Image: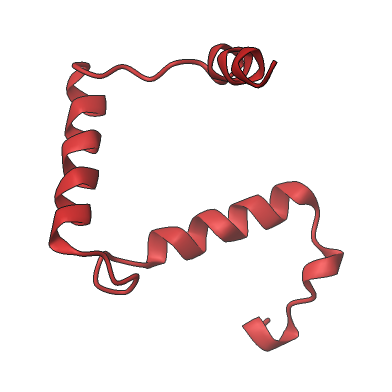
Length: 71
């Protein structure tokens, strides 16, 4: 199957998300036109996430905080 043969509407939500993930993984910073500062910030955030100095919060915690702010 080629990309031209792909019918997006026939994919499940899970299949669409996997396709998006694969497309994003296939890009590098140069492809998406990031500035050096943006790339440095992404690298900093990835390093912080990996070394545990900036742990991620579970989505339900983040969502609750956003909903509270929106009132």
